[in-house]
Image (cartoon, rainbow, N blue to C red):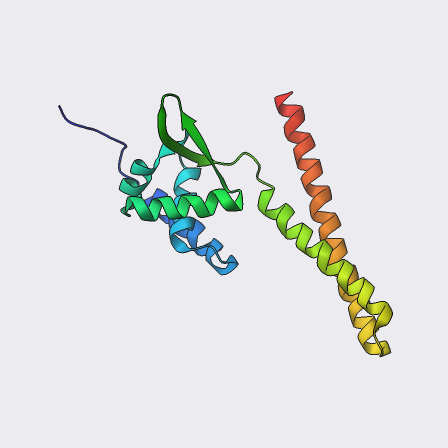
Length: 159
């Protein structure tokens, strides 16, 4: 009996996977995790570590480490299989997880800058800190408003 397994990845698939990895690398995402994320985005259903490793020509340990990183970042989810310890992995439906984390950082930066501007000795420094605070707090508010709007649209479509 021949094990057919998943079809080989097309050149377009491989290009997409590599582009996703390249886009995420400057944000601190390891290339292997970026490639796993790109691969999972192209699958209709969650897949096993074995399939990820085979399709991306990586070790199962490398696939596991990449998957752990992506689960921690909220990019993917681990799904259990009934009657098995084996997990399957697929993209998270919470697209906003990473942006909300970034938004919280911007809010904290803005609050710190705003508070520090009040105690800054020089007018130049206080002005700079106030301007930076306004920038970070506006970015936070804009991102969070956008996420609320997009989530409301998704809820209307599914509801």
